[in-house]
Length: 149
Image (cartoon, rainbow, N blue to C red):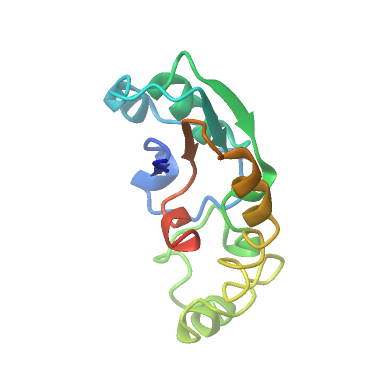
């Protein structure tokens, strides 16, 4: 069995280097135009419920059954969402979080240290049960890969 972990297409927040987190930011026109149908055809694609991930999966795998999984969503960056590092270069909360290698809790959001294992932990048995003998694919954000190694 092969497992593919993919990142969503480009959004305007990506271009502006803004923290998206759990905000439901759509693909940009350029991001959508850059996507092409994939050369694999999974039966099922497990996808973050955020529209940027769902829309990416629809283009890449038009014949696949999409299954939204809440725990594949991006980490909640709390008060940092919608802002970029330039806008926060003097923000003491942001500086403290970055100074802690982004492992502490974002004010109003999740704790970076818990994120790779927190949401992923309950999914391990869920994934194992559903992936036996089937061709599956996952579409999520760019840091999904380290979660599943």
